[in-house]
Image (cartoon, rainbow, N blue to C red; front, side):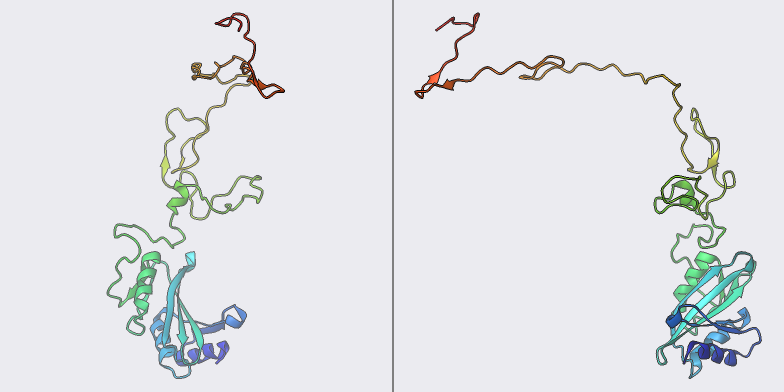
Length: 271
């Protein structure tokens, strides 16, 4: 069955005016996409599983999308191992009452996905009896995948990867904009400037460090006292010119070694 037919079939089964069918992008990999109201969420997934034409017996994944003022989209992807087609089912829950019915009794494989979505987005799944922490420590506060959640790592440490929005490819140009998830200075987690640091005031936690004070024009940095190192044995002292090496014995034409004549003042005198 083609993607359009899969979507239309689920709309016929759910029988609700608010159910809308469409097709996702992806050309050859397009999927039937059906939007249902939260009250028909379980009915839609049950119909997709039990209907002989759809037969979506394999639960692939479930997650959510933060639409800010629009609420949250809860998304589930199902697959039919018999007919080799997929189905994407979505529902939108309001931000102030983010809850939808659990489908663990229909698809036991959804238990892990509902726990993760509850932990990361703060969406409740009524009927799920084990919505305990899955990836984060129990004392963690907040939901990291909500768009209003502050990315503390971006504030505490500059992003080491690709260039942030606002930076040119050449590395220069206009000043970089704040990356997504980082609040403006003074909105969250400010720390006072250390005593004696010039150039910055209070700013985001872990912001840019203060620049060192500039020297007045024409002033050279003072050099520390340096002690002249003692020369090692066999080496000349610093500043002395190395002397020439003493001439070695040179062989004569008859093959005998010629001894160099001693210079005046050498011990032993002339030979």
